[in-house]
Image 1 (cartoon, rainbow, N blue to C red):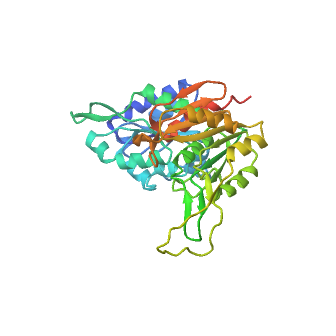
Image 2 (image 1 turned 90 degrees about the vertical axis):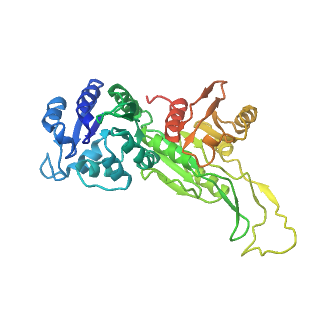
Image 3 (image 1 turned 90 degrees about the horizontal axis):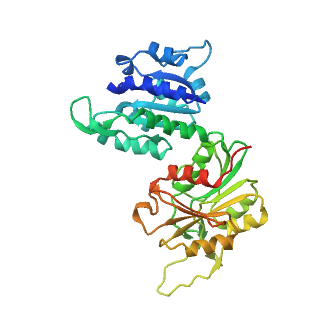
Length: 389
């Protein structure tokens, strides 16, 4: 696998040399990119000798004549690691600023990004907003550790252990081909069922879990289609996105997609108004009754129509009791169901974190930690997918 290692101007820049060697030991090709500040601590020559590859330093550096280095390296990279990552570089990337070769290279990339911050503890606390922004966009953050820093103070700011950073990177890289050749269909976000031309019936859903699943499946090499209701979370540009509004539209869109794996993460409204009104229902002092009729069960319908695919349903339950979820799994005819307890405010609606219990039709159970939705997505896909022949 091809790895680009970005090195920023931190006192721990020298440790990037050990990271480069460890990644090479794990079998990856490593090319390095140093910021101007990094070159105050380490030299490009050292990394060129260690990696036997050219090292980029300046935004106008072109190792191959006629090639645009930051575009070519971005396209060829299976993973970009920034270690150590300074507050300056983190803040630039969070705001889409490309002022040097490293930031322009990252902005041109579509591969997974691993960021290992290293800085003074107070600087890290002040940069946490940008760190969270990058994590929400799909970057994997290897958090700094507690300890003594260069200033003589103690706090969270030391670069994470090299073996930990390399292990995270290698785990992502090992997944890069696990779904190559597979077609993954994901439903995401809420549906909106019109009451009149102004109002609608809906479920609470930001679409963050669906977006995380799409990003994870893309990283694993799948051809990903997302059928998405009106959600606030942005979806990966590399996925094929089919926007819909109602449950019936979502079902029709899903039926037009051929898939090997279907994950139904959307919060589909179970009912819709039987007789949507044209125009706008006006306020009056009279009581108003709206007749509701059931919406189609999307994943159950898909599972009956194409039994050769693998189907994973989602269930948002108001308690940790799994009996209802088991009944849903049987009734829908799916291979597994992922259950999240929405009574827990730490993993509730619109949260950046989640915790799942996955029930399998064969009786197995798996339980995740409370962690980011992207980490949960990778964990879930590892559970429910198959090795590539």
